Length: 377
Image 1 (tube, rainbow, N blue to C red):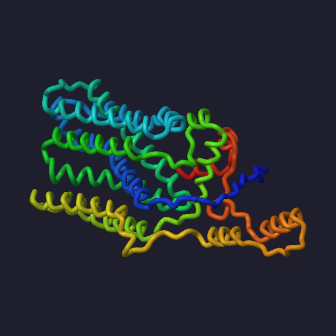
Image 2 (image 1 turned 90 degrees about the vertical axis):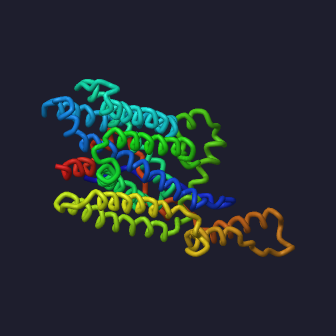
């Protein structure tokens, strides 16, 4: 199927651009990884479902009902996406910081017999956990990858892998630190989610060039143009690769460690002290991963702009010589022509794949999209 859609090409203005603080950029990546771990906390309900079934004499049908309600709200992300697109990540972070901790605290109070448990109440509490989890997932991915427009694949791998690791980490921490103490486990999850949500509200913002719907309708044309001009620096300035390598190494170690730990815990008769050691090592690994945002540029080097950008800026600053006997108009004309001839045009296609402007329904009818859907089944 041949498409007649034309790619939109943006010309980059590389003059008077401010360098991006890599410590700040990778600190947001670490916060995004924390959000991904919070997105995996919905798995915590499965850890205590058996104890809950025994405590309240629930049937398998009751457990399926509670779990299904949580899954429905876990994937009901469209309203939060609308809020994110129009107002940015802060309102979504505020909602997640309230909904998820409240749901987990209510489950903890249920185990403490402060709240009388029932199928309806437990379903509501689990739904609040699911809704908060999907909001943290939205906060983790969308704002963070905007800061790395030329390294979206690396960022996505780091973040989404932590969504999977989050389930194993929750299980390891539960077994090591909160075995047979589900109420304390849920209080811990609520505290971690609240801390992550507060960090998101304080520091997680979209980059200047990424305008929300509210900003698009309220900023002047000059302000929008100035904000969008900053995209050039995010495309030109390459993030230091050693920080990504740091994260990938930790992911590899986590893959081996968590798999081995799960097998040993499930099939070997180990002591509770060993389970605590496993949990401590897992927490220490998360702290080491956070070290990728530390300001260690003195020993590991700094990020450098792309050579294409350096060449373009260098050529744009070249002054053309001219004689004194030439008319002023001819000087301006010849100089402009020479600069225009020598200075290459730098576009976003020099750094990222072309983007296509199509409506939602046009994208819905593409063969590529339905091929992806087909591959799922």
